[in-house]
Image (cartoon, rainbow, N blue to C red; front, side):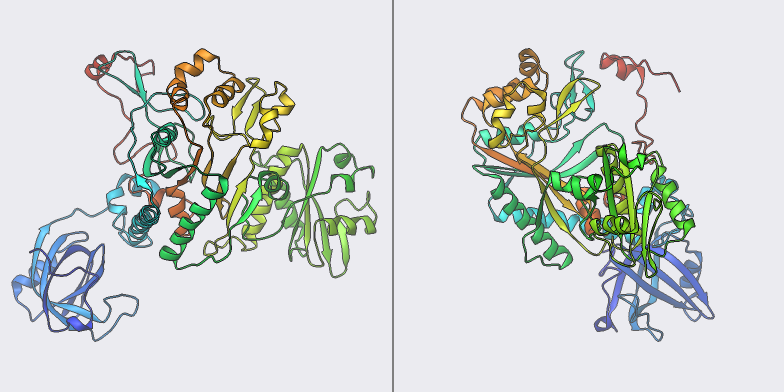
Length: 588
């Protein structure tokens, strides 16, 4: 056999035993008459030692070893004279008797260490080498454990894991589809699923009342740190349920994963917040509630004093940054430039400093000291705090102030990745109006049910009524990241047809794109609902990271490319002819 033990397994109880290890050479160190070799596999590192007194054959082989050589090492476990408390195997070493080189390695382009000297691009190109490093190994192991625990929990309460197809019909409503040409059906195309949404609803019609799947999904959209063109969901659906049933079920799953993976227990129910409150107090629909610093609308309080910037604004909002009254002019100028960046979009920043010597503001000539203090108190400020105020168009400035809140939270150390603050956000608008296309779009997707109390407005033909319809939807938010989202679904074919009508589809278009599910609903569809968790994001948050790439074995870069495979790439003319397609892109 190649090995009797792994490189992370040996302890003091193995002293005196003859064992065989196999792995990769981390480093070789010559110290006087002794040569030390660190041998690594995914379980850990064991120190090997050879002496000048050993055979010439053994010493010649050890001297020839290079980084990342694959070797087999036989020897006797001994207690180390100089122990290493930072290593699990730091109390022992393997006194070498024999070394076999299983495969040589060229010098790797970066060091296979926790803190590598390789940049992101070169490590992506040699991803199989990067995956040997401990941080990525731990990330992949965490992902595995989370998948196991999700499956265990859902299986224990009666869910069935059912696979759904990857080659499906394109239904262009939402993000762009990845399309796949069909050789056997010239001029026709499959799409890769953005989610198994319609299939899991059809499974409810079929009577499989508790479904889940840890499934790959595909969206052709612009990328960020927490997005990939292909990603994984914990996709779930239940029949004969109301919203409360779903929230309770999956709050239980989340608590189970916190306990089993991180050893953290949540004994109290997760906080819930309406979409309206999230926007009012946090400026976004995925609030980070690890810290306070809520936003406060002060529009009516500050208008009418002759300060035209406030008087002409649709919205004036403020936050109080604790303990920041000592910010210097240089710091405030830098903060002003930060909010003026295009991605934030504010025209400027007004501030109030409440120091031990009193209250000062950048608009003192327009407001009395008493009024400035009243404004500060309205922002829930106290002595020692800095009040930051933005104004302008309501939606834009709420988002800007929300971004400023997160920035100040990060600067003040409030966004600690070892602290977890779970939240359910509920009562989203059902529809979003787009001025460019002069039509409504589904806020979540077109199968989301309106709240029962809003059905009259849903059947109104007035734009202002439809804008007030709330969805029976909910998102799970963790530390300011949307990890999951779902809804109670439409299960009545008439209501579903009305939704397509509201979204601007003709009956013919709705039938062409979604006739299969409309017809299925006519055969006794039960009330149902569900949600999907972004598994990659979930893993990154449990690992204390913001980027999901380390938690995916072979991710794409920011341009959606796999630089290791050099994909996507062109295909030859024979393949193009077989698929009955031509490219209009310029030849590179």
